[in-house]
Image 1 (tube, rainbow, N blue to C red):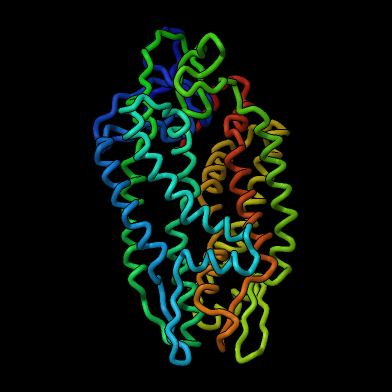
Image 2 (cartoon, rainbow, N blue to C red):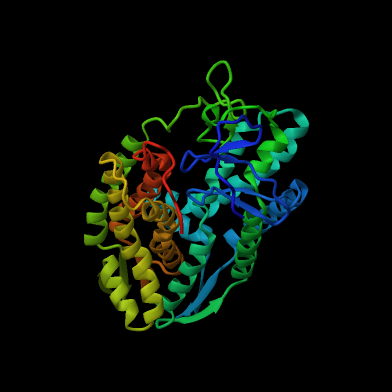
Length: 414
């Protein structure tokens, strides 16, 4: 759905300022199933009325019931020397902790256990908190951020890669936990499709319509409310101080990016996995592991290469280009830079694939078996670099890309 930009000096009561490009436009009236986009940067700004909050809560309850099964039941099983060994989410995390890799275990646990559980509990908290008059603002703010860190889809690919790695050494079987986990993933996708954070803000903290001129409209970078600040300079909806740009956005983004670049060197040079086969020790870096995987399954090796090498390197290059273009006030290629910004925001999470594979492999075998697998020192550096690149994008205020256009009315056409 296309929205006409504001070009007249009149006063309106349905104005909204885009949180991605800072342009002001008419807030659209959408029917169910329709989506509104900013007329300049094509950012999604509104959805038509969708599922009720009661249905969302029902989905959250179903997910909460499935989570213990998906986390504890075996995802895959192998039969080695007459013994059946199982791999589960929780077992992989615990195996990392037992080997002393607590930080890496925390990263994996955060993406596949911590954030999904926090998302479900937050939704149920809104349901209960509304009835008891609790403060729901922090939960609504967190909901929008939690979605970026839940990586069920990537973990499923990790299960497939781990299964391919061990199929040549042992008999492989699917576990009951895989059914629960796939079901949990499908419910999560359904929840994300129908979860509209903006509509929840309107439900719990409705704001009166204000008659404002386009230049008077302010935008909260945190809850995306458009309007005037209160007497204390705060957003009237989320109570966070409103400012034209996110404070220290460039500094935080540069710090995270430089740190990730430094960490990527040991992440790629040191071994990320160590395999013991018949007493022989074999160390694999990220690249050598991909090469060995390609000898048996080229499509899966391409997926791992893309997630583990191509995506991190490309993301660093793109972020460097975006940050430099902001400092140099570059006006060329704005459309391309906006698209690159959105692309790296989406693909960065896929680099966690390697850590998910390692956690599954560690729960399948241990040092007392003929075939053993343990994590190398590169895993910590690689996981830290992935997290920092994700944070670098999250902390970058995309409106800074538009500041080079002094008029604020740069054409953005397809």
